[in-house]
Image 1 (spheres, one colour):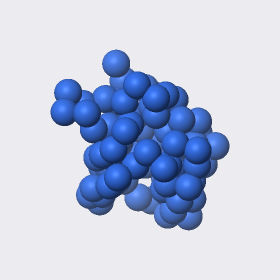
Image 2 (cartoon, helix red, strand yellow):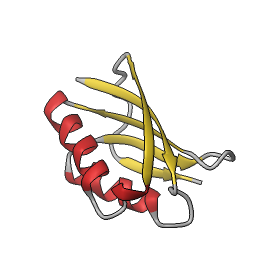
Image 3 (tube, helix red, strand yellow):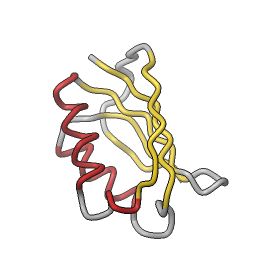
Image 4 (cartoon, helix red, strand yellow):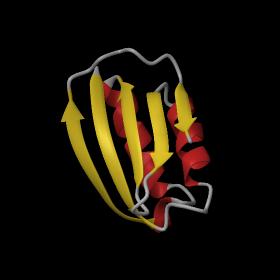
Length: 90
Protein backbone atom coordinates (compact mmCIF):
# COMPACT_ATOMS: atom_id res chain seq x y z
CA UNK A 1 0.00 0.00 0.00
CA UNK A 2 1.13 3.52 -0.84
CA UNK A 3 0.56 7.01 0.52
CA UNK A 4 1.40 10.11 -1.49
CA UNK A 5 1.33 13.73 -0.39
CA UNK A 6 0.85 15.76 -3.57
CA UNK A 7 1.02 19.45 -4.33
CA UNK A 8 -0.47 20.33 -7.71
CA UNK A 9 0.43 23.62 -9.44
CA UNK A 10 -1.19 25.24 -12.44
CA UNK A 11 -4.71 26.45 -13.15
CA UNK A 12 -6.20 24.17 -10.53
CA UNK A 13 -8.47 26.47 -8.53
CA UNK A 14 -11.82 27.79 -9.69
CA UNK A 15 -12.15 25.13 -12.40
CA UNK A 16 -13.66 22.17 -10.48
CA UNK A 17 -10.31 20.49 -9.94
CA UNK A 18 -11.16 19.18 -6.44
CA UNK A 19 -14.32 17.44 -7.72
CA UNK A 20 -12.38 16.14 -10.72
CA UNK A 21 -9.75 14.72 -8.34
CA UNK A 22 -12.39 13.18 -6.06
CA UNK A 23 -14.15 11.47 -8.97
CA UNK A 24 -10.91 9.95 -10.27
CA UNK A 25 -9.81 8.90 -6.78
CA UNK A 26 -13.09 7.14 -6.02
CA UNK A 27 -13.05 5.38 -9.41
CA UNK A 28 -9.60 4.00 -8.51
CA UNK A 29 -10.30 2.99 -4.89
CA UNK A 30 -8.10 5.79 -3.54
CA UNK A 31 -8.81 7.19 -0.09
CA UNK A 32 -7.73 10.54 1.35
CA UNK A 33 -8.59 14.15 0.64
CA UNK A 34 -8.04 17.19 -1.58
CA UNK A 35 -8.07 20.89 -0.71
CA UNK A 36 -7.18 24.29 -2.13
CA UNK A 37 -4.19 26.11 -0.69
CA UNK A 38 -3.96 29.91 -0.28
CA UNK A 39 -1.03 30.05 -2.72
CA UNK A 40 -3.12 28.72 -5.65
CA UNK A 41 -1.95 25.09 -5.47
CA UNK A 42 -4.06 22.07 -4.58
CA UNK A 43 -2.94 19.65 -1.86
CA UNK A 44 -3.82 15.96 -1.98
CA UNK A 45 -3.32 13.07 0.43
CA UNK A 46 -3.89 9.81 -1.44
CA UNK A 47 -3.70 6.24 -0.15
CA UNK A 48 -4.23 2.97 -1.99
CA UNK A 49 -2.49 0.01 -3.52
CA UNK A 50 0.34 0.66 -5.93
CA UNK A 51 -1.54 -0.21 -9.14
CA UNK A 52 -4.54 1.95 -8.17
CA UNK A 53 -2.24 4.83 -7.25
CA UNK A 54 -0.49 4.61 -10.62
CA UNK A 55 -3.87 4.67 -12.42
CA UNK A 56 -5.06 7.59 -10.26
CA UNK A 57 -2.00 9.70 -11.09
CA UNK A 58 -2.14 8.82 -14.78
CA UNK A 59 -5.84 9.68 -15.07
CA UNK A 60 -5.36 12.89 -13.07
CA UNK A 61 -2.76 14.07 -15.60
CA UNK A 62 -4.51 12.78 -18.74
CA UNK A 63 -8.12 13.72 -17.96
CA UNK A 64 -9.89 16.85 -19.20
CA UNK A 65 -8.46 19.04 -16.40
CA UNK A 66 -5.03 17.42 -16.61
CA UNK A 67 -4.02 20.03 -19.17
CA UNK A 68 -4.29 22.63 -16.38
CA UNK A 69 -1.55 20.93 -14.36
CA UNK A 70 1.87 22.54 -14.64
CA UNK A 71 3.61 20.45 -12.00
CA UNK A 72 2.94 17.79 -9.34
CA UNK A 73 5.30 17.60 -6.39
CA UNK A 74 4.97 14.06 -5.04
CA UNK A 75 6.21 12.90 -1.65
CA UNK A 76 5.84 9.31 -0.56
CA UNK A 77 4.92 8.94 3.11
CA UNK A 78 4.28 6.03 5.41
CA UNK A 79 0.91 4.43 4.68
CA UNK A 80 -1.59 5.06 7.49
CA UNK A 81 -4.81 3.49 6.24
CA UNK A 82 -6.99 5.81 8.29
CA UNK A 83 -9.26 7.02 5.46
CA UNK A 84 -12.32 5.16 4.19
CA UNK A 85 -13.30 7.56 1.39
CA UNK A 86 -11.89 10.41 -0.65
CA UNK A 87 -13.22 13.77 0.50
CA UNK A 88 -12.98 17.43 -0.42
CA UNK A 89 -11.70 19.61 2.42
CA UNK A 90 -12.97 23.20 2.49
